[in-house]
Image (cartoon, rainbow, N blue to C red; front, side, top):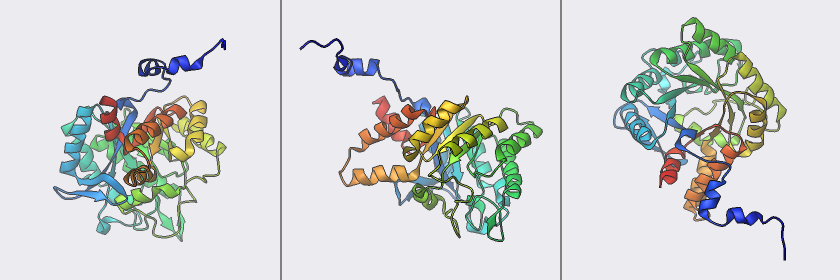
Length: 325
């Protein structure tokens, strides 16, 4: 049999497959989410996220040093706020001596080159567990945006390289950009959670920070997972308002959205490979149904192939070790 083209020729050996691979993962692709708690010498495994931990600041600094030694360039910080500090204003979020602010300073002191991103949303600080201020059962937009600006400037004052608003309030990117400019933080970036969907896959994350909503759900501000073109609209608006990076969250169930956004914007696109996605792979691997290492690399490659320039993932540390092995 004569064939003019034999496509399998470029799949024959590992050498040629690696030479012609269209998508390459490297440690530069990853952002590592870190959960931080008060106290010392604390390392609490998150029950729904096996082998992932919430650490006190001393342990977090040690982890950041190890990540840097592995070639990871960026971390994304989340803190667990004490219940007695939570209220409906979120004012602890811009406390200059708050856990987030102390964490930023400690990490930048220990590893100055590490690119530190910070979560900007009120849910860890809210007595209601929502991303915004609550009035008469409604999450109000404009007052929440004012609080997010204070929070962002506070993070910049502590030394953050980039703030990452995850709240999905209207107009917050422009307001944060203006706030940073007016405070003379002209080098601090904004990674906007532009297409953050109201997803069932966030459950383990809420376990990590005790930030589940105290009433209702988040569907009045997070996006409807049935919608596609709305994600492009949100991303384009965030870019117009001053976002340096836009994000799609979650990852795997939304790879079509990643590609749509990538095709529409002229800034880098990040994807959050979220806690539920992590938990599913961990659970299946524990049951012996899949090979965990192969699933990690295939999952992250698929996200990058879809158009992600950066991937926030709980698998980052494992992935880097696998890529370096």
